Image (cartoon, rainbow, N blue to C red; front, side):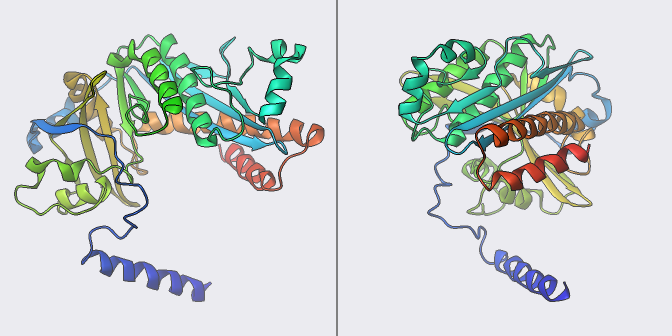
Length: 361
C-alpha cells in the first residue's frame, strides 16, 4: 500500500505545482467550452456584513425540497431505465414511485422490437407503466442516447412531484431550467427538453435551483466586473471562484443576472455562487431563481445549513433518499430480469454497488 500511495501522492503534488503556472489543466478540445449561457451581468453586490446578517437571521423560508435519481439495466439488448424522486412538502414526504399512476420507467428497444411491441396487446398493458417515447413522441430506439433518456425520465419525475407540491419556496437539486434547453443539440432532443421546461414553467417562480456539478460551466470568467483587480483564470467556475475567494473561508459572489435570448425565446434567471471551506476540502455550488428577492431570502439559510460535505442538509436528505429508492428499483429489476431475460455481465458490479448503498442507510 505504501508503494502505490506514494506514487499517487507524487502525481497529485506535481499537478498541484503545475496549477500555479497553468490555471486549468484539462484538455481544451473536450467540448467543455460549449456552454449555453447568454448575457451575464452583476445586478447587486453583497457585502460581507449583509451576507453575515442573512446567515444569522434567515430560518424556515425553505418550505420544500426535492431531488431525483436514475439508473438503468442492460437486459441483454433492451435497456430498462428507472427513476425515483423524493420531496418534502410542508411537513409531508412525497415520493415516486409511491404516487399512483405516475410512471417511473422507460424502455429502449431496437426498432424492430419496438414496432413488434406496438402491434401486440402487451403494448396496451405497459404503455401506462413505462415510457417508450420521449416527451415529443420520438421512439426510444436504436441510437437514441441513453444519457438523454435518463435525464428526460428524471425531469418527468421531478415535474410530477413539483406539480403536487404546495410549498411557496422549493429547493431543487439541479437547475431550474432543464439544462439542455439552450444547448446546440439535435432538434429532436432539444424539443423534448423544451416541452419538459414548459411543463415546469408554471411552477418555476417557486423554485430555487442548487447546482453542484459546475466542472463544465465557465460563466464566472466571462463577467468582467468580477475581475477588476485580478486576472481571470482560463478555467471553469470551481477554479474561478476559488481564485475570487482569495483564501477566505466563505465567499459569495454578487447577484448575477443571466439573459438568454433568441428570435423565438427569452429566459432570465438570477445566480449566486457560494464557496466554502470545510474539513474535507472546499465546496462550491450555485443558487438560481427567476426571482431575485426569493434567491436572497434563502441564501443565508442555505449557507448556515451547509454540512461537512458542502451541501445544504435539505439537499443531502433528498439526495440520499432518492438514491436509496433508485437502488431498490435497480435491485428489483436485476432480481427479476436476470432470471427471465438475463443481464449483461457489468450489471453484477452495479448490483453490488446498489446493495451497498441500501445497506449504508
